[in-house]
Length: 214
Image (cartoon, rainbow, N blue to C red; front, side):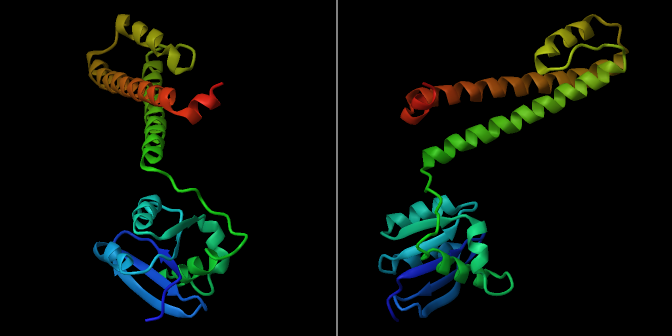
């Protein structure tokens, strides 16, 4: 088999598509590889250039393949699309990636370290919880509004609203769902506070984060 110099790798959940060429651009390998055999396949290759779209799992695979001595470059999916020659299939995508990764003017996505992905997960989780808390606050506000209990909008006014609800003459049937929503609101706020504190601790020891705060 001719020596492979460039590989276009189309990632998936379980079955990956490989399109590999030699220095002359001749196709050497065009095949599917199951997840369990990914590392075995690439460990058998001499160090080469591997292109992948910057999608879910790409940074993980890039780190693993880099450990084997390969040079891995991640490409924004929108930059790969112009190189697709025919209908969108895994094989066509892998071939397009293989072509795109060798373009001299191509822009690549910087490879994220595990800690960078972990911090990004913290931020996304916090954003998700904030949206949940806002939904809960809106639900509580709407329900209590039906009983004439109204305060200015804003999560920071929820304490005042709940204090008024505590002293209000509400039907017993309304107390149980209100307690459920309140419990979930309180728990979500506590989780947000915890992850916010963790993010602040991380920022205090991260040099880039400290520079941005100056």
